[in-house]
Length: 252
Image (cartoon, rainbow, N blue to C red; front, top):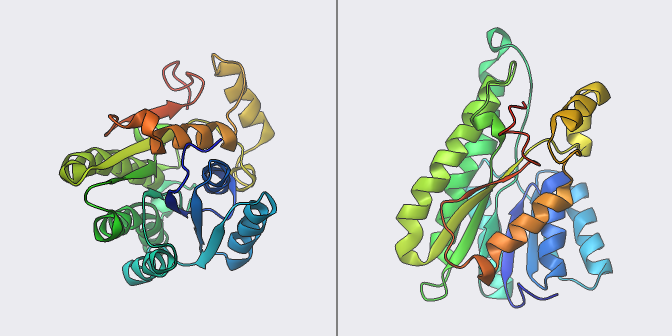
């Protein structure tokens, strides 16, 4: 497969989970991939996995909430490979707790990583994406942007913001031929998510999912590849649900 041959993609939160799956899927489609993650160990592990499959990747241990650090990492990546075609934003800090217990530092960190970084990615895209070829930004939102989820008010606010910013950027950057879309995964039991959710919760959601199973990181990655590819060349501002119809069935 080579739907992304010759493309250069920068993926945040790519050390594990959905971000890692997207990075590996891009590489499998022959893209060169920048692996951005605050954890140097996991970022480098993702690079090794891609290189083991004959792909090309570089690790960037970076706190994407910090504008200068984000832009510097992309600058370095582009200086090596000469172009930027795709940015996929997956980095998030998640903490579930009652709103009455949310601390200022927790709130600020979650918003900085999950929402502010979207703006920095857009700035990187405008700086480096060719004005004739254009490019693609793919954000990661959540059904929590639409559903009421107890103990997740900050996360819901962030993902609602990501969805809104996706639509606004699609309009603003369209004249630059930059398409902006978002994937919207339902319940995906990644290693990080399993640390916060019980197996009973996962089983309950599986039973309420019309397609009868939970999602996988690879399900989301396949959708991201589609949105990044020429097959989606006239799609912009889309919020693509990847949830087996759970959201529309009323699951949360």
